[in-house]
Length: 417
Image 1 (spheres, rainbow, N blue to C red):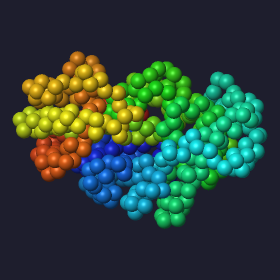
Image 2 (cartoon, rainbow, N blue to C red):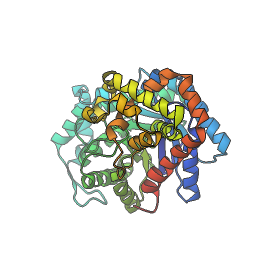
Image 3 (tube, rainbow, N blue to C red):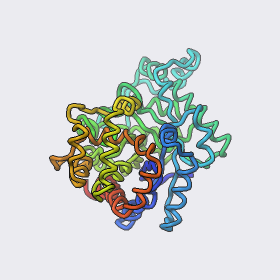
Image 4 (cartoon, helix red, strand yellow):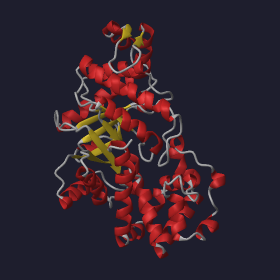
């Protein structure tokens, strides 16, 4: 199972927008942009919404059948470890190996020593095509990376082999997630992490490193966009070098996690992809749940009232809802309007507050982030929320498709940068 050069991950928490999401990819194909779609949903989201893993597979298969999609598509077991993977094995063919709990913990001294000895040939200045300066590798750096990341990669190997034992070799795509670290990885870090992945025999087709800046949920990138572009390009070059050096899969590509709505770095990503003819996977692009709220708000009446009610309940439960996402949201509570004030807004004004349009003075990233993590409130409404999605499906679907195609796919993969 070999992924294509470009792919986009589309989370769909309530399982209603599969057709709308796939329509965006079909529109892209009509414009000459070939990419695959990956439906992803994490263990935490399934637990919160009380859905089962096979529901994502059904949604994906039904959307593909309804639109007669002939391209590639996958169902991602998002951020799984050994403790959670088994429930995903039957329904998934893409597995994001999350080993954050093992990063920073030491492997055995014996395995660290063996890693250092095995890769001592890298010590010195490594010429990496496409990079302005050689990558300087020291024995101390090799040992430091082994101490920081080797145990995590070994754990990824255990998860991979567990899945392989259940599904068979070559029947799924593997992504290794290394983005949940305190500091971004340097080129030499990336080089040595890839060496460890190769040592473990993990045929990773995507890798998600840590970049500088903040990748908060559902809002734009916070940081130096030029620095990000340099880091992204360095990683692209190191991956290309490591594929040849370590025998990793030829289609190995970067994965940008929490890639939704990072509009200020899309131009840089586009430029690097074109310059190096590189691949990319963007994870959870499209913020579909928020587009559902925008579509309902625009519909006015009871639908807009439902969105206001979700906001009010989310505000009441701020601490509970935000705690699991504390590292990936930055909310200024002083800029969250009181419930009474929010209820006085028109449906159109509510939509403007949520829609990620930074040129609109009504846009409020604090409201947007709170609602992004407030999906639990909608889940608890059950049929009331799901019925509203069905009743106003046309307007909601138009928002979902347009957001993914116009604001994500075109800037990332289109001709304009």
